[in-house]
Image (cartoon, rainbow, N blue to C red; front, side):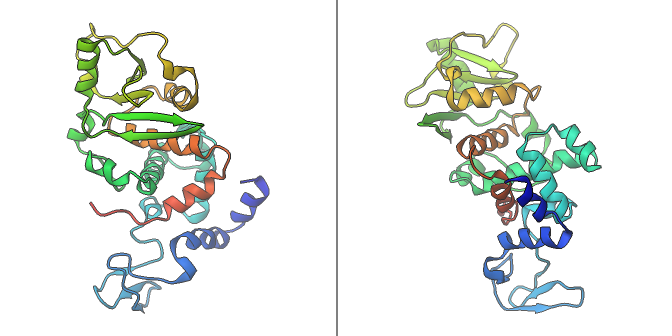
Amino acid sequence: MDITGFTNLIFSESTARRYLLGFCWKNHQRFCPRCRERKLYHVSDGRRRCARCGYTFHDFSRRFLNACAFSPRQWLWFLKLFELMVPARDIAQQMGVTYATVLKAQDTVRRAVVAQALDARALYAVGVRPGPGRQGAAARDADSPVFGIIDINGYAICDVLSGLTAEDLLRFKLNFHLATSSVGNVVYTAPYRTYQTLVACGPSLWPSRLVRHEDKRIPAEAGGFWAFARRHLARLRGVDPAHFPLHLKELELRYNHREQNLVEMLAKALCGLVPDG
C-alpha cells in the first residue's frame, strides 16, 4: 500500500473504522457472530442482541482485532509497522504503548493469519491454539509440530506433518544420518522424500550438548523460501516452540505475497471471527 493510500485510511478514527468494518460485514449485513442469526435487536448502548440465542455484541465482538485495546486507527498503524517488520520494542516506542501490548498484538495477527490458512484445521489438530490468550506451561515445554517445506516456482507450502515428531527428526539424524543444521533453536534437515527440508523446534531436538545440528551445505539454504525464512528467524534470538508455527505461517504469507499489499491482507485476517476451541 502506497503512503498516500495509507494516509487516507488513517486520516481519522471514522475512516479507519469504516475500512475495517468493510472486512467484518459483507454488504454491511450484520448477523450474530455466535449463531449466525440475522434477526437482531438494537439495545440502548449501541450494541445488538440476537433474537435466537440472546447474545449481545458490538461490531468487532468475537473477532481477532477485539483481543487488543487498540482503536481502529492504532490497529492500522500497527499493521503498517508489522508489514515493515519493525522490531517490537521500536513499535512500542513509536506507538506509545507497552512492549507487552505489542507482543500481544503480534500474536493476535499471527493467529489471525493461521485462521485464514488452508491447513488451519490441521494446525489446530496438532495443538496450535486458535485464539489469542495465554498459553499453559505444558504448551511452552512441548515440541513444535514438524513441517515439511516445498518451494515450487517461488511459491512455498509449509505442510504440517502430523505423523512425524521432533523426536523422529532426531532419530533420523542419529540412526539414518539425515543431515541437520539449525538457526537459533530451530532445526532443519536435508531433503526428505518430497520435501526440500523438514523443520521443527523444541527440547527433544536438543537432548544434550553432545547432539549438534551443524551439518554444512543443506540444500534448502541455497535460496527460495527457506533462505528467506532463515534470515528472519536468525534475528529473533530463539523461538518459543508453541509460537514457531505462527512465525512459520507468517513467513509463508510474506513470501507468497511479497509483491502484494500486506496491510490489506492482514486487516482482512484480523477482522475474521476467532474459531471456537
